[in-house]
Length: 330
Image 1 (cartoon, rainbow, N blue to C red):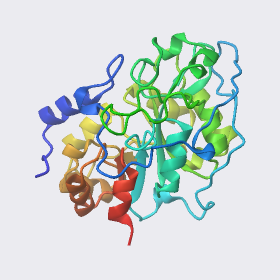
Image 2: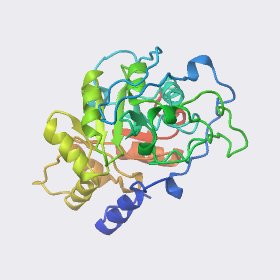
Image 3: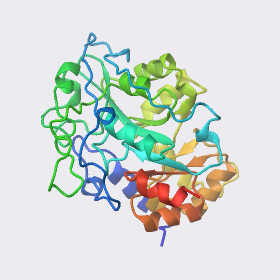
């Protein structure tokens, strides 16, 4: 049964789900695949090692090593983020079957039918924007330390697949295969036709402006939704870029739940990224009445996928895009 919205519950859930200073909560642990993993070996197209270059300490978002590989999603045939089709959103690229937030994961996600790539962004100490969820590299790589204290060269030297295991630790099929933490510019260059949901993870030093500049450089502003738990980051992005698509931040989510049914409520964003436990029919109906798109996270259970589809959400963020594709394919 879906949990109906109440402010104390919403507050507790949203704050509990907010990122910790490092690592992640038990509820955010790597899920066990409910599908057969195809991760027994690495093909040349599935494994990418990028040459690393560095910039100065100013965060500019400029290219810092890109790959020549290009994967498309069928061309720009309309903005799926604004369309009516229920979207398969690959959370961190789909970390059930591939090492999270890597070119390996994003390539696989698009190959198995994901419509949107979700990723988190930090910056290296020398100002290169990189895709990684945690504040530190400890959980996902063979290294240690805060992302923002390491240069891009140091980050690229780490094995981003070191701790990935599709079978609970029995095997590590991509360890030592040259899988690296990618620069965001690498991702945009590799997947220029993809659609993105990007969460701004780092507060200090600020990285939002550099990310927006990089999106503009790659002509991806109209194919991307920006998200952040930090209220100030999104407010600043919207103020400087009125046309950019964003999701509600934590404070705005609380406000939305408090005003369900209020005809005078005006939403400050176009997207609602809500914990699935709080994505009730009332919330979805109210959001749709305001013209908002609703994307619950993070849905890895087939039963919850069915619930969310029945509720009428517009997209589902999942670590298992293969599983979700089975529900969405005709």
